[in-house]
Length: 266
Image 1 (cartoon, rainbow, N blue to C red):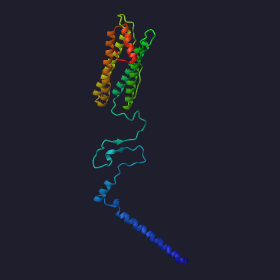
Image 2 (image 1 turned 90 degrees about the vertical axis):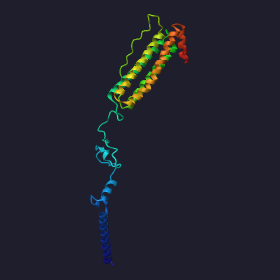
Image 3 (image 1 turned 60 degrees about the vertical axis):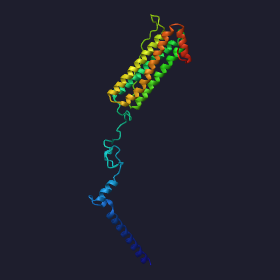
Image 4 (image 1 turned 180 degrees about the horizontal axis):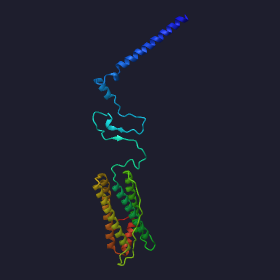
């Protein structure tokens, strides 16, 4: 009985081995990759089974998207991906010329400088010997507005992938003791008007630079600030005209009071 069982086992093992061999040969004979290279079936297989992207163990390998089989067209020509060898200064920098980057940093300094000048005017009119709290608050708000504009330009510099480089701030010496008897309020507002005009000219130069560099997006960004700046020039010019009308006495105090209360100046 033992011999009979052993024989049956050997027969079953031989049958199983023969079945595996036949199945392997059948798959190899009918597999698509075994077809002749020039056959139509082989060509169809090569197109249908071509991978879109293939990940390799080499992390530094480039991927040329022109060779990726999305479809029969070549819409990805010129798109080559290469992993970064080192940490870049910016990953979002795109068509941002160094001249535009430097000009924007210069204008950031201009906005901070004007803000500093307005803050100095706030310090003057807030003195107890001057006592024009309305004008002091007016110039304080103007200083804060210029700082906010400088920060907006700093954010735009970062959006474009540039690097913000701050520079020293210098404020011209302010002299309020005018020999012609003009009030300190008129002197301060005339100075403010000239500062606003200067800012507009700097914006205009940046816009011209963007045009020279063929950078429409940069020009569009500057356009928004230029539109607001011409209105600031108009508003400051109106304040100068109002001070000239009211004179150097009680009218200046009344104008400052209206500014303090937030009412429109007469």
